[in-house]
Length: 215
Image (tube, rainbow, N blue to C red; front, top):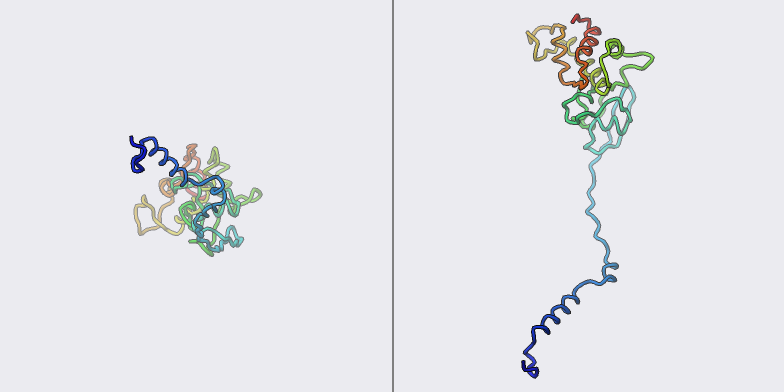
């Protein structure tokens, strides 16, 4: 190679020049330290003030709009009698009464029941004065682990109310007539409440006693 020609560069010299140019563009430790971090994008969470009358007491809660009624009861009001089972509305452990109607509290938003009246297992009776269904469940051993029992009892209250008001079910023989109190009717109406311990026959006996039905 003729070193006197300034346009002629060796391969080694080309690699050295390229490496030096790359190094010059890299930030130094000092530069990195002075760079301000990019703050994350701030997103406001929609929230609302919700009033609920729970077991006769009015509560006003500031809730994320996505809060379920179940989480409002358990996490905000600390009424843990209502259980979170499947969280998909399939087991019935979260059943409560809203304006007298039984619902799965895990599938409804608290915001949807603003100014509503909610009754949980804590509002049905006390240890000193049990609700008739609570007493019947104890008498007939309608529970084992007890996890599903609050939902079972709240659902039974709703089921007996439906029967009393003449609301038919899938097994009602005549949709226009007053439903007949029977074990079959009770089983159909309670079918959304699962007892993994298998105390179903005792549960039917307990509800039947309160309803005045012979099974």
